[in-house]
Image (tube, rainbow, N blue to C red):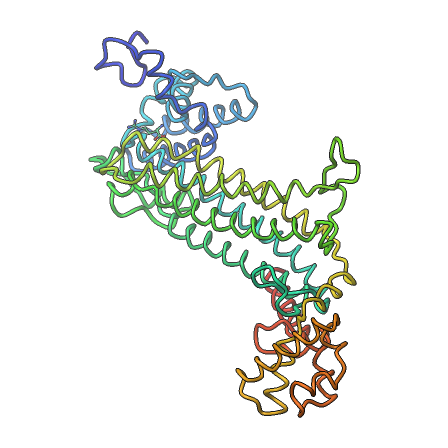
Length: 461
Ligand code: ARG
């Protein structure tokens, strides 16, 4: 080929500047779309033949040639070329080398604009599925913790100050719920993105009698996209994936932070196994929760990818602009980061060894059953809650002054604050009683936690 460019040389007298090639080429990263690109081309060629647009013999040659290209790429033997810009032109040029003339009919009724939109949708769709599997695995690990510790008492916090006793199982199930919503967001995004851009061609559709339903079905899409301009210029499917990924990463970072806190010498609520900690090169006693810290940090990376692509897309006129080539690296990096983060969190959660005695002792500290006392004053003495709150506050102050916890305060000291209090009150001041009493739907009582564990086991299998 003597043209300045093998794909569009007809109009050009000179080839591109080296720096033009450098800024323009996406092959360095979009080679990750090779399987999707080849699947899209196979579906397109089969449709062209079925519609009588290209000969069956050409479609057969294209199909065989594309399989050879796929095997070359998978074997690491494919001669990727920067001057061919992207995966679409690399594949097509290699196909022409392999099968000659029929390859030159493949791009009939197609443009790289609908091609890349299709490839990328297929790729992001796969990521939704992979992330969903990762979330399920993490939920199962959390569920196993919840089942083992359905009645283990630990402090519940607000403002990271001891608030009320809760159960370990309840705390684990809170994350099961959060990750279920993350999976739900991915499922929603997947359902919306599962329409096929192929056949939109450059932007306006095509004059060839194509069958868009056929290519859509061959690629597992629910239907063709309805509007050709929208089909080539929309990346909201990627934005939705990144948004869902950023929310999920945010949830992971919260659990990661709790693990970091729980592992600290001051808390010692849990122990991470050796294989999920690292040592220090100078301080021999250290067991650092590096993976949890990195999970906390990687949220910035995933959210950063979302912000970057929102910024790329904002203000772009219809239809395709080359700006949109900047969509891929962000999504690739965010997806890789999310999958690694999910796997690391699953491993850590599975290996977490809670210190049950320590959790329970911590649950009793900080007057954590003060609300139980106030509730008892309401229930048994008929006090309005605000008055009960005040009386309880004075009892807590008395206990604090006496240097004891609430169950340790003598009845006489309580009666000095409210004479109607009886010894029955001691029945509600223990942390076990406290959690057992919280039987409202969604509450922390072990009975409720066991019901939720059973429900989630049925869901997760
Ligand atoms: N590499 C391009 C991208 O990622 C493919 C589409 C190019 N289309 C074009 N008209 N230059 O967006």
